[in-house]
Length: 464
Image 1 (cartoon, rainbow, N blue to C red):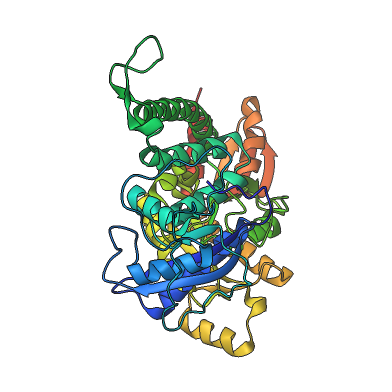
Image 2: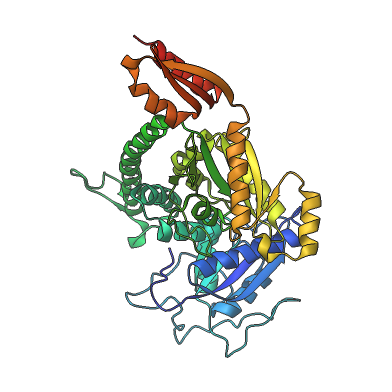
């Protein structure tokens, strides 16, 4: 993984436009990769693109583009034949060639691509807008002399940096180790090591096999610890099972945390960064009504979200699956938001939340001009065009949420005997009390609540 703690690293973007991918979608995906790099503190110094029927099995791109890419990094632009020569301790990745080696000059850039000037700072990273096989990443590194990160590696690095709770750190670490396991390289020439002993290598077990076994054991330990945390989270969800719940879902950086703050008054982190929020936060809708409505903020989605991350964060995403209403927050100021909506729908379907009731909020309306607002209102008549910065819009969304849970509410009378007066407080907490009177038999309450809430209250009143 990239170490961004040192001086700000520089990177060049690499993208391959495959059949069926439009120019707009390809440009949007590369732009998103640049934003992912920016979130990690990486400076983007250039980009190299190519149209291909598929990724080249050797190094993702063809020979010409490989040399063009090396022009940004100072590499040879050619994948060396034979096994890589191990670097001496302390030797930099882009060390000068030995005297008997002749460095290969980078090829001229292709049409439409800017050539890196001699004065331009050299890139020490290559960010690839695809998932690479271990051999493709290794060949790219050998040809460019730079560290290569595919899209999954970049996203994992961001998740690792932003994870704050113990649960989130465990989830990210499981996904990170699962990504690294097949990419562990042979060390010490790859020779098998004989020997045994408790915890040591078995007979004929190579160094890389030992490392992979350690990774598998570590993943098993982390999953066992995560399972305990997930059980506790499941218990908390069951305890609040009788309360209405709303989940804020959507693409990363769409504004979910801003709405969480506006609706609940909570102090969740709000930053203009991708994946700024990884931990699920549950707070009550403010001002509190009866019944109390709980709102949860969930991890954001993104195009090509690694499957290992979806699997690791499944318990977190279950907050969205178990909620009665999903508020789908969309960044309406982003021209590619229709594609982002589809990505969110795909992830929700993957976790079993495709059929949940959904309210679409076209957020950041304050960034749109009147013509754009009018166009979106015509194209998305069922969505709400709002801004989390506008108090009137916050009130409107709050009332729409309350209205959703009150749409099926019915009125009923409940009589609580004086010997069961403790239930009066529970009724006040779970139903809207319209009237309350007292007679010789007990307390008579006229309430308005959802049928399932009334059924639970009547069951408790019928208990001896």
